[in-house]
Amino acid sequence: MPLSIKDVMERMPSAFIPEKAQGVEATIQFHFTGNEESDWVAAIKEGACTVEPGTTPAPTLSLTAESQDYLDVVTGQMDGMKAFMQGKLRLSGDLNLAMKMLGFFKLG
Image (cartoon, rainbow, N blue to C red; front, side, top):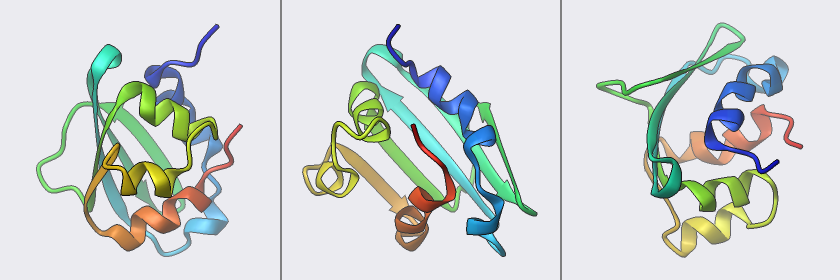
């Protein structure tokens, strides 16, 4: 069964590694286009990660991607940096956070 955006977003809190994100407080807005058009907000605060559908007015970081491209990055079929360079992942806000964020989650 193929992985969906909903699956990935709902698994984020359990894949979160608090030790890697010590001292980080951030709100990340995810905006997906394509087959699984949706908006999600992830909040990292006090060593925990929560994720819920919706939008937030002032995110620390915003990520916009076509849903399949994002799934390809998450599953390792596409390199995240390459996807960013090719304009497949669009980021705005705290780009340092974007680079560090990959280490906050155990993927796979």
